[in-house]
Image (tube, one colour):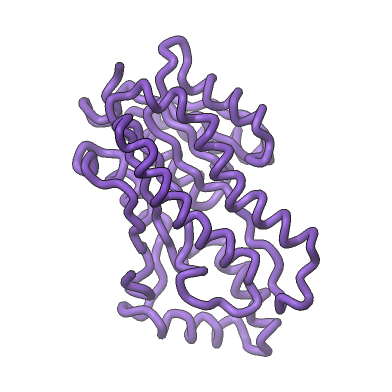
Length: 265
């Protein structure tokens, strides 16, 4: 058996889903800088290859597989690759997600609803299911799910996304109790207003729906935070690293808001 955190990540293996860009790419790079061997998942080979090359250029170790988190066979291959000959996986970060439609519920198609739930919630279930046989062999296996403040507070015209992300809260808390006896921690990070291309796209679509300019909507959203500002990808990465470190070995079932104080529960 292996202890993922006994020597500060060095020698550990991790899988990060949705790692081709944005928060997922930043998380993969952060883990690699700590000495973790990282397997990246995503839908686009070119972006995954670019992230892997960036990790290797810094002296890190990484590989990738193109696939969808709704494909259980792909996820089984991913976890087996990360576990390698030892059959041990120390870290799983479930980051893959899609924004889904921006529209009133009455205008949301069943197809858009099902796709959003499939990627953002069912994908977490499937990845955990595929990873658990290998995580059980680690001394302190770590699962970190990337959720969202959305769902814990209303975000009009985003019902599929909100429902999926709140569902991940329930999954995290219940799974933490199921696998606690195996020494596996399961925690959730709920970001809000993380600067990057995805936030820009979301603000653009929501501002059109509400008849506001992007600047007006951004100001409204940041006004609802305690710090009156957005957060960075680095803020999320540092929280992931903490949850995967020895300092968090006795933390499980927690939902940590990286949200500049937008919500405090």
